Image 1 (cartoon, helix red, strand yellow):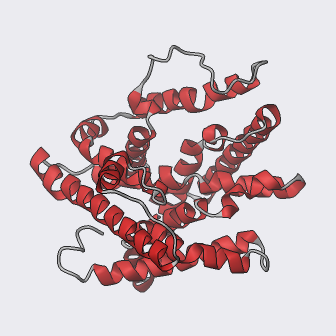
Image 2 (image 1 turned 180 degrees about the vertical axis):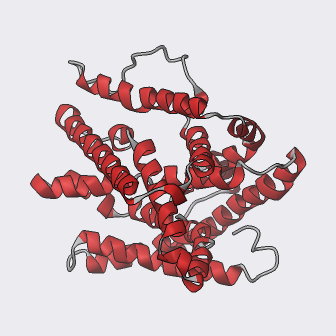
Length: 349
C-alpha cells in the first residue's frame, strides 16, 4: 500500500498533475480523473499511519524517545543536508546563494525552506505522533456509530459546505456557511480524521469476507466519487477561472477508503499472499517508501531540470512524469537501502 501511495505522491509533484488544466474535451476529463486519484496519496498515508500506530500501547516517555525525537532529528538532518546540497549546486553553477544560520533555524521550525515544500507532511506526521495518546484513546473506544458520525461530520465540512458555496449565486468558495469558530477537530482536521478512519477500517472490516460483488461495489463507489469530484472541479474553473484543492479533494475520504480496502483485499486474498517471495519483496519495498519521499527533493535538485529539459520536447508529459517517478523511486530507494546499513541511520529512515 505504501508503494502505491509514494508513487502517487511523486506523481503529484510532477507536471502530469496539472495536465487537466491545459486540456479540453475528453482528454481534460481523463486527466482530471487521474488528478483526483493522485490526490488520495496523503489520505492513504495518514490511514496507514493510523492502522499501524493507533493500536499500540505506549507511554509518553516511549513515544517521545522512540518516535518524536527520532522523527524531529530526521527533519533537522535532511533539511540541513538539503541546504548544504543546494549551496554546493549553486556554487558549481555560479549562482549566488544567500542562506544565513538564522534562515536555516527559521526554516527548521517554519518548514518553509525553498525546495522542501513536500516536507510539510513530516510536520503533519510529527503532530500525529505528539497526539498519539489522545488519538489512541479515541480509536480504541470508537464504535461503528462513532465512526459513522465522524465521517458524516467530515462529509458536511469537506463536501457539503464547499459544494453549496460553489453553487450559490456568488460562487464564493472562500465564503462561509457556518461561524468560523465552530469546528469539530477530529472530523475537520485531515491528519486527525484519516488516521482514525484507517484504524477503524483496518480493525473492523474483514477483507477475507469481501466477495467479488463487494469489490465491484467498492469500485463503483470509487468511480462515482471521482466523477462527482471532477464535475465540481470543472464547475469551479467555469465560475471562478481557477482550480483549488477544495473540489479535487472533496471526496478524498471516499476514494482513499475504497483504495485502502481494495489494496488490503489484493494483499490478503490475491496472488501476493500466495507467494512468499512476492510478499517479502513487497514488504521490503514498502519499508523504503519513507526514504524515497526523503530523497525526492534531492533528485529534483540535481536532475529535474536536466531530465525534463531533455524529454519534454520529445515525449508526452504523462510518460515523462511516470518515468521520472520511477527514477526517483529507484534512486531514493537505493540510497535509503544503503544508508539503512549504517549504525544509527536505520532508525531515522
